[in-house]
Structure formats: structure tokens, C-alpha cells
Length: 233
Image (cartoon, rainbow, N blue to C red):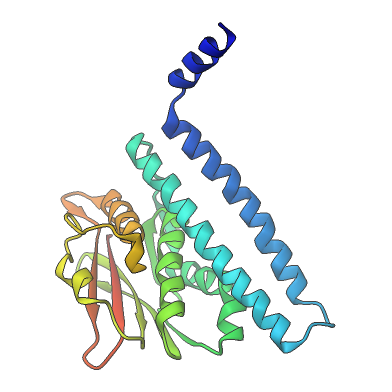
């Protein structure tokens, strides 16, 4: 009888709520782990190799944290929860993205160029856009050879934020599905598509009259991938 009541209670549980709650708890634990890694990295008695190992651990932890944030944001979208759109400094947002990843940037000797007017302000959900750009930036760190450019500018009625790297560029199957509506999800290929689904969903939540946000992928003329986020302003 007891086992039967337990099984009935399990069936009554909302699995989506359990998943969201678990992901939130894991995200909090990862935040503490990231702080601990950063504190360890400033120790004076570490070798160059140990600093590089910590930077790699920090990078991988950031990737896991980014995935959990994506899951939580997509859950919020399913629950029709509102987002908080306010005026923000675009430069501050992009500098925050760089700061969150400075440990890996320095250890891998990556050159990150920030191209944005310091007086450029725009309206968006700062937390979600920071996480969105950070996820794209983390991938750029992974695939770039040396150089990454973070840029932002106004084009017609949109704020455009771009992440450009000098890596091998986006694979053809991702460029073919640039509308992302029918893009296949395959974690085995190293590109599950979750990050792009997250980016597309968050971009579309930003609306201004008849305009909605969207994303675009392209490769440079010579090499490297360019991710573009368009937010109506």
C-alpha cells in the first residue's frame, strides 16, 4: 500500500518543474564552483601548467553553466513568463561578457577586440542577452585561432551585436538552416543546436511595435564565423 501511494505521488509530480528546480540548484552550485576556481587561480604558488588547468576547468564549468541557463530560459518561455526589458549600456553588457571569461582568454592568449560606442544604449533584458552573447562568445573562444571581435552598432531600427572569430567558420549544415525553424538537433556532432534555439527564442521575445528580434549566422570572406543578434530599438 505504501509503495502504491509513493508511485501515485510520483505520477502527480510535474517533471518540468522538477527539471527547472534541479537546474536552478545546479546553477547555484556552479556559481560557487566558478568563484572557487577564480580564487584558486590568484594563488602565488601555482605553476604555469596549473594556471592553465584551472583556466580550462573554469571554461568547461562556464559551458555547463551556460547550458543550464539556456534550459531555465526555455522553461520560462514555455511558462509564458515575462522578460524585463529596460535601457542598458551595450558596452557594459559586452565588457561583462569578457570579464566572465577573462581567465580563459588570458590563459589561451586570445585577443579580444571590443568595438562599440561607449555611449550606445539600448533596450533589452540584460541578464538574458548577457547569457546569450556569453554562450556564443564561449563557443568563439573554443573554435577561434587567436582573434575574436565583439561589436555592436545601430542599423536602421535594430541594435546589432556581433561575435566574430577567426576559426574554421560555421559548418554548412548550420548555415543551411539559418532560419533555425527546422534545424536538426544532434549532440553527437558537437553542435546540439540548443544554444541557437535559446538565442532565437530570446531574440524573438524582444519586440517593438511590428518588429521582432532575430539572429543570423554567416562565415567571413576568408575564414571565421559571424554570429549576429538583431534587437529592435
